[in-house]
Length: 458
Ligand code: SF4
Image (cartoon, rainbow, N blue to C red):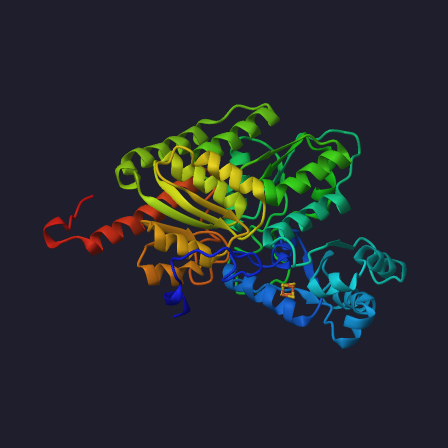
């Protein structure tokens, strides 16, 4: 209802966000932590934060997401949360017995200034962390950044705490997959395997948040990178970080700490970005690209050729996370669609510059904003309507109000399933994305077609 009052007059706003296009840092940190085998994420703050983070992840992945909380009340808010965290660490190892606890902070504990490394050291000294078990942490105050920077921070912490260099190179490549679905992480591993490249993918939520129904609940499912694997990352031949914002910090930290050379690439969404990923894998590992991968690429090319007439010149509005939007924009432009309104809630000027470069050939104006919100995006759409919207579940309200088709993509998707099981990265993921786009465009065409043009065959 509120959206119906959205005006098309865009006002200059600095101190007000209306309908944010991002969520808070700890959600990303919790998601990254779930990609470590036998890890219990722990929220150092009040119960409300933890409940919100868990419920958002549970609703998106349709799996129960477990996490501990330091359960701050008035006392901890005034005197600091050390006693709560030490007690929590003791309880968690005693009751749930994970291999590792990944602590992230919240707005409150950051404002108090709790020093998590010092508290974890104290817990170890006082025997609360059993032998062979670990606690690591990331700082994730939510008054800066977004869920993507929270993910990046926790992934970087995996390097800071665990990567070791023993001096003997291993024939393996580290792949930091970025803030993508479990299905995407699985696809990235599959591509590396097809190329006969041993890979340590971290974090890896496949088989954690998209595992099979066995009838038996497992608090710590089979998937996830192990601490032993993380330790070996310092001896790998190289690191590929996918997505500058989500994976760049960990890739560079590994280079600095253990001198593992890294390349930070775009997320492999779409044909060009996947080409660059496959080529980087090929040259880093010194292997040839197998026929199976060439066949997958050829299929994507065939779908693009067959469907191009429906994509050409269609205007698209995109909203979501920077790494995804950069690759998605490139993909859409490569199939002659015109992304003209692009907003991410995560701040960062480089994003705007990159999108401007990618859309420079599009006829007509292109609106782009980092640190923007859904309200502004909606206003842009009112002023220059589009044929298609791509964004998360919250876009459905704007889609209904404006009667414009929506493809759900990104985080969170609370009202559909499938995203955890079918990838959108790689050549096969590209085919899936195109299928989703084509479906909504042709459904729309069919719905609007007069009787005499209501075609059975496309
Ligand atoms: S924004 Fe801050 S206070 Fe709110 S849920 Fe996130 S961490 Fe907690």
